[in-house]
Length: 216
Image 1: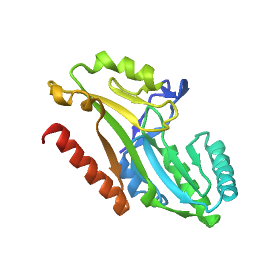
Image 2: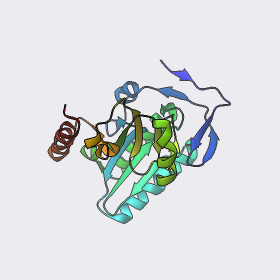
Image 3: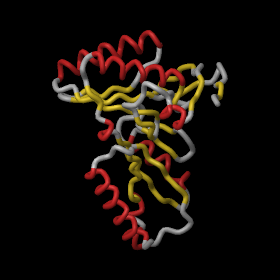
Image 4: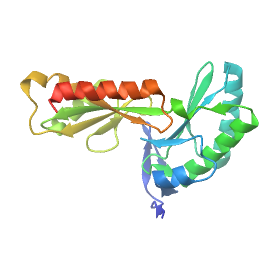
C-alpha cells in the first residue's frame, strides 16, 4: 500500500526546500521489488556500493547516474572514491519513494551494462545516540556544534546526509559515573544480511561496550 504525499508539502533538502509530489513505499516493499537486488534499505533511504576499480570508471558511472537523475528530476547522494562508489536514494520528508525505486533500478542496470559489480556487504549506516534527562534542553547545542538540521524533535542529520545522524533520547536517570559517557551512548549500527565478519565483530564490540556503560 502506498501513501500519497500532499502536493503542497515541502521537504528539507540541505538548507533548501523543494516540493515533494511522490508516493512513499515501505522498506519491505522496496526490498521485495525486482531490479534492486544490489540495494539495502537502511536509515535515510536505500544504499548500494559498487566496485569500479579506478576513478575514471567511477566518474563515467556518475555521469550516467546524473543523466538518469536529470530525466527523473530526482537526485541521489553519490560518494565517488578512487575504486568504488556509494549511491544513496532518499526522498527527504517521505523516506523511500517510487522515484527512489525507479532511480535505483536504473543505477543497477547501468552498473551491469558498464561491467561494474555491486558490493552489498559494504553497505552500512551509523547513528549516534545521546541519553538526556531533557533532550530539548541540549538539542540546540548539538545542532549548532555539528551544523546539523532537524528531521524530528530529537533527530539531527548533516544537511547532505554525510556522516552519522544523531538521536537525542529521553532517559529519566543517568548515573553520575556514566554521565559523560552517556553523551556518546553506544552507536546504533544497521547491518545488512550480507555484512562481513568484521562488521559483525564491530557490532559485538559495541554491544559489549554498551553493557559496560549501562550495567545491562
